[in-house]
Image (cartoon, rainbow, N blue to C red; front, side):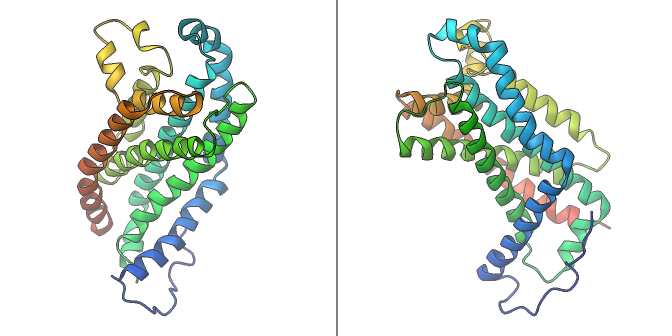
Amino acid sequence: MTTAGLDTAPTRKHAEGSVRAWFTDSVVLTSRQVSVMVRDRATFVQLIVVPLATLLMFKVVLGDAIGGATGQDSTYSTVPLVILVSAMFGSVAAGIRLNRERGTGLLARLYVLPINRGADLTSRLASEVVRIVLVTALLIAVGSTIGFEITGGFWSVVGIFGVALMFGVAYAMLVLALAVSAEPSAPLVPLLSLVSSVLMFFNSGFSPVDAYPEWLQPIVENQPMTPTIEVMRSLAAGGPIAHNMIEVTIWTILIIGVCIYPALRGYRKAATAR
């Protein structure tokens, strides 16, 4: 990972710890993060091509089963599901890159440069927001060609993006906390892939809750993806959202609240380790 261009910072107009410096540096570093994602061909394929292929695969494989069980077009389940899955696996890729950058010493290099100390972490979350928005828009556009029609108008579209971002940012914070806390040699990929896969297969988007074994239904119903999918489905097709929206909000606040301190502490430790 190159640090070209980071050595010669321009003369600063604002104090390094100021809000203005934090904002300015975050914008610059967010641009760097997005550039890294776009230029890495393997990452780009994983973030763009894989979600589209997954959406079409789910439609072909699960379409009739879900439609027969729910009486509703399966795309109202699979499009929200794939949006969330793409957010999760994209965060895993970003977390692995962060862990690798820790091992190469890039975090330490950034930490000693005359930039705001919180800007790099902020930029990583901001780049996740950019990625989630773009991929969500793409999946909604493709989904609209196979039956995913948003009947609630503009604000329903805004709501779908907002809920996707709530889930995506919370999951990204979890991955970030793990990535900066784990040693470069730690089995981060298997761990994060396992968590993401378990969540992906046990939610109401993959199969109706009552189709799971009875003992498993409470877990499936209350894991973070299920209420998020249900809110997105209701926003698109119509239906109540209040109960599930409360659950999504609680999960978002809980995950971010639990992970923010380990992320900040782990980042500082990783950046200052010798």
